[in-house]
Length: 256
Image (cartoon, rainbow, N blue to C red; front, top):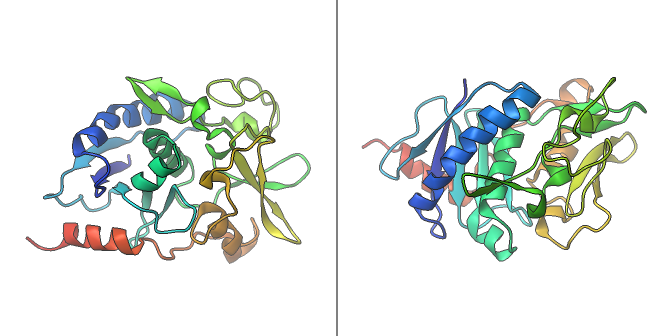
């Protein structure tokens, strides 16, 4: 069972506001995501500034400004090889986007693809990155849990597995496999050109769907190489924490 430490190092959101999100994180993961994607049950614990996260925990960290150009939030691996989601509050607010949607987006994708190496093959043999929120990521497709707006996410049916039946995404916004909604995107692997990004037909000009920045999910995919290619598609630990996160979290881990 993943134990997830929620840490607030942002000056743009209060500890109290972050803590109000935890019941929504818990319910979405354990009630909505788990029966559809088969992820393990998880617990979420807020870790105050004078406390140290328990060993072996996964992290969700709220920070001020993005440590990667054009990235509002992303999930990665810590130096210990454990999943981490980073949510850049000031950057998200400057993009007129929802902080809670950004956070739950990364939490859901961290749940389904914790090691950043999943991909699904379509009937034509094309591999698609296993990022379950990107195709429906725009705030308009989110839904409320206890007054907190959370992200929509696709079901396995989005990847057009054999005998797929039922909803393409949790809230029923998409109508067909591989449909990318307005404001969303997806990534597929081209053997000649590497990982390619496809956006919704009316994608808004948002940093969420800009050219994949260094360190983003898309850029990490491109460096990992081809799916099924031995070590080329294994998860890599690289720049797991940016400078801001390192400074803040180093203080957390210092002996007291």
